[in-house]
Length: 113
Length: 117
Image 1 (cartoon, one colour):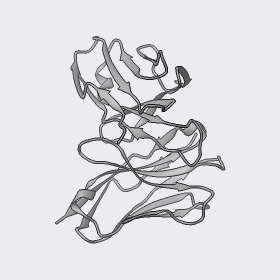
Image 2: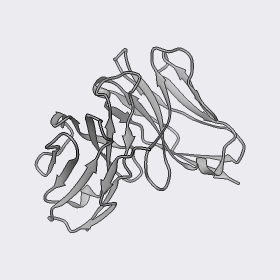
Image 3: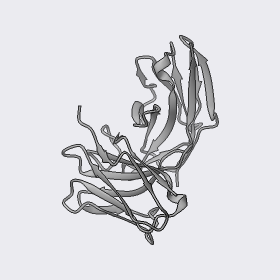
Image 4: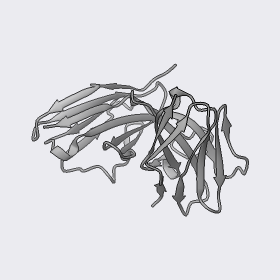
């Protein structure tokens, strides 16, 4: 079974600064995707960024980028130029066979004005 | 923008009572998922449907939980009888695909927060 671990329960960042969230996973599958989801206090999970395991190039979406280290099974998220609206729970997720997602425990991001 | 609809938004029920949640996925999405998210934790898969068929319900507590998607569109998740430990957020999600690929990933609904007293 796949497991996803987020070792940082909470991270604090100053507005306009950069914060990096860590995620490690374990799998024996060769074909999979990795995701970061954001869950604001209004609760709906929103997809932030997606990475295909077969691609070496790290995905980027505006201020969000990932550092994907396949051999180390590491998938970190960098939020640049942090904004107040970035405050939320962030979940790392693994997507494998059957398109089922396995989530980590989450990291709460606090943005200080 | 298409959304996954869920109702009710909040539900308070007494233990041993029955409770049901409803989900309407994005039109055309054949794959539907129910997840349970305990406060402070990540979501965990309860059941996966492909059209009207259950693909995976290995984590569904079948002694008290049931799920159906009769016409392959909307779905209902039921708990009977509810226990205190069932208090959680119940999330529904849908996807156009059931395998890893360029369309992997879900659209989630806003969830139903269940409190069992």
